[in-house]
Image 1: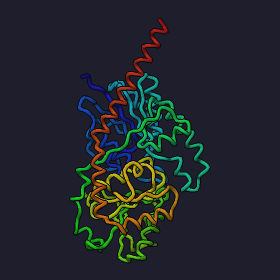
Image 2: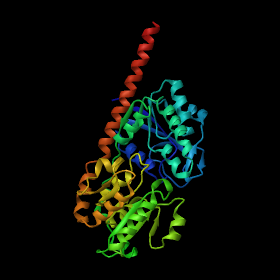
Image 3: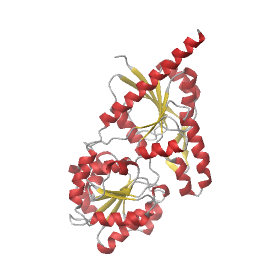
Image 4: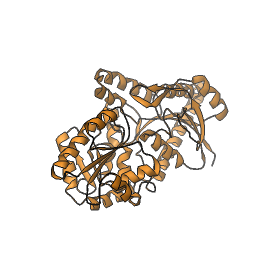
Length: 385
């Protein structure tokens, strides 16, 4: 089979610590050997040894997200790179200026483009007092994605929302999870000792950005209610963000573990007893699957990854979206159940979501859009003749 040359364009990639970067890395690692990969990305801000061919471009920091960058629209750089690489298909993983520049260059060359919708940026505006931007942001995203051959989203509910908002050619491609890294065997009694928790003390875990759009106060309320009946209940928060300093000062009893990656992150997951995830802005929420792979039952709202993988009373508890009290009650219900048994069921569910199967579906999408582009080109030639 001929080698397919895939150009990936993204403004976030490992060693960045976020769901988009991690998911993209796992997807690319799982692709067939007959797919050649070139990644055009913003320059990493720490040491990183590329696993594929990488082209680094300049970026600027995002005020509300200082750990992320917007890639600059370096169209001329992309032109020079692609003159040599000659991609067959382009995958734009982020919708920033770098992604727009890559799309314009691909359109000029007649290269089919697949885009990804990973983050509900239009929903974030309400959490930062700029809700009036929501309509503008959605229109901007729709304009970008409707120009591409496919828009890939991680869940059916996101697909339905986008289609209702006028997005076209939307296709669901769920995320997978690394069940070898995230495993119940990573549980650490030493880490639990550091948290002040013996085997009988319930430990709730949150992993993610500590920011307004993640609905962090609700996780704290759920923990506080749990403490009314079990004062020794621990809440561990893994991650960083603009709310961390304030919350550490207000709630010294909460264990803020900072950013954790790789095996250290796996140990934090596996060493807790239950995972609580109150976010209402997720397109997927990969941490839900990582928690389940680690043997943790999950409390979450009935959306995104949780809607796909969590079954109340079996491997976690779901609450109706935006119902804070129901989320709190779901947390209490889970803690009153056989948490270990539900954790075993959570692991079984996570094992069904392999990156190998996800990558196979992604490859089929790439080949489909290439065939469609070739068909359109042939029709144009026949019309001219």
